[in-house]
Image 1: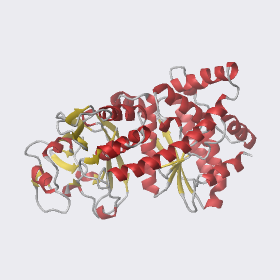
Image 2 (image 1 turned 180 degrees about the horizontal axis):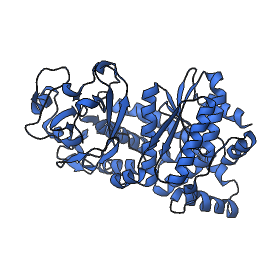
Image 3 (image 1 turned 90 degrees about the vertical axis):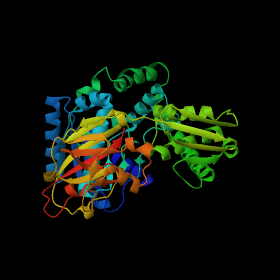
Image 4 (image 1 turned 90 degrees about the horizontal axis):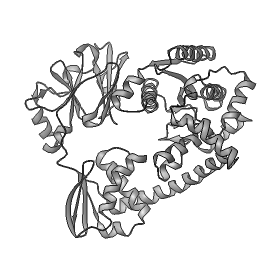
Length: 465
């Protein structure tokens, strides 16, 4: 029975804990509607609080309206809170240079994460199934991927994104929906031939099953489980090797070259990946990881005794006999930029490879009670002048840091916070009218802080692309 199998998956991977608040992404399709009913029936066993979240991507006006109505109606019938978000995915995909599917995925996750904050929830539950897993693995294979990509989606990621249906096949979910009389709608975009994932599902997999291997999907799924175990082992080995090489992290990561050479090549690759993630504070995956890591790996294969070299993607690699240093390039130039921000919504700033997400929040709060993060600012909506803009530092800029009386030159603020001259062009400023409202990554202006008089809050988040 499907219900028992999902219970086993939840138990095997510890997807849910007692008293969890869960944001449940529900599109109106069969997978997410079945997941909604399964978790609803498990709510007493785990003392769950469920929040139903639905995103309208603005791509299929007629269908989207029906899907939203279905999900809201079913949420109300079950007595669950319903949250609705509507976004212009097509516009965002064009400005961000992303495929429509990738843009939609980013927008969905951002919406779900804002609900985590709003409801103080711990988990985001998604309806991916075993068929989705096989399609994802094949898609990554065609785009180029290592072990990390070929292991597929994880049942639980970052301890908060859970996929309870990941070990269940689509045909089983559809049968359960019919048997249990669970309403759902078909997404016509799943039949479009211009999406590679659709062609894999509709054309390639049936051809392989018919002509080559009837159990193809099952074999790919089992292989992904084996790869997941192997990747987990290599990750632990690489993490230990990294800390042996670099016991103390600084701005420049320094290590002994002979010790690095003694590592297996597979571990060397993962150690370099960790170095780059530490230097740039950004995770690298898939083809992006290959592009960033490969120049460093190749340069260290047969290096001269000493060299200093600026590599692609803003990496400076330095070797002095048996010591190697890896750090951000000091000559990476950030061109002057100034971009008007969509409010509410996402805006891409290509010059600094960042996405800025702006959201309006109702309710009152004190500044000191709001979640603290260097990438997120909470500002008093009424104290801001729109449209907001994001730009980099200019000589003569001044602002009043939170908790400080009077203004100071931004140059002095940088000196006080030990921000090197070469890094200052990378620091972004949120501009309200002609004033600096937020030095991104450091501090907001005292002039736009949230206080007891605040009636509406603006949440601004800056993310690496």
